[in-house]
Amino acid sequence: KAGVTQTPRYLIKTRGQQVTLSCSPISGHRSVSWYQQTPGQGLQFLFEYFSETQRNKGNFPGRFSGRQFSNSRSEMNVSTLELGDSALYLCASSPYWDSYEQYFGPGTRLTVT
Amino acid sequence: GQNIDQPTEMTATEGAIVQINCTYQTSGFNGLFWYQQHAGEAPTFLSYNVLDGLEEKGRFSSFLSRSKGYSYLLLKELQMKDSASYLCAVKGTYKYIFGTGTRLKVLA
Image (cartoon, rainbow over all chains, first blue to last red; front, top):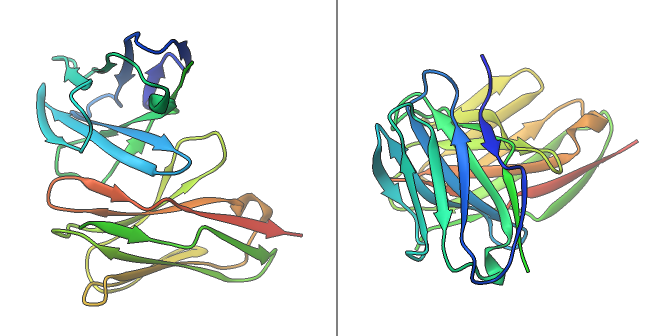
């Protein structure tokens, strides 16, 4: 089985711009979670989608949004980028929304200048 | 509040045993997880505890005490490839909460 894929792997954006990141889960997995990882804060939960519905949300501002498509692929959008949004964005795939198994993708490294 | 604490860094010698501790305070508890993350790579799942006690998987074991809000990851017969960050995470009522990770350096 192919693993979780994320595109793009690296991205450089300017303050004020917006960005869209994509995640394709493992085939058959229907839940996708997004995380932000920074050296100081570690891994922080952004949101989780299951069957095209947002099930849970972390404590991030409304500039961070996401969606899931019928094929379980998910996108994450960050609008009005700030320098502090520079981070590794990880997507994790699970079979179901309450499954304990999580398989992480390689991440997208976002740099905001 | 919700909080997970683990040491920032540990050093051990090849062939030795190391224990990485994790204490947590979360609203709701649906399991405690340990992940390994090599530099520049994604976290990979190591272990899952939902009941008190020890879970053993090869060279890796994980222990949980829910009443104390405490877990540890035990790595035996350390190898150089075990040099990585080890993340403790708790699945709360609605989401996962991760610690900032323990960076383990294995010396020859």
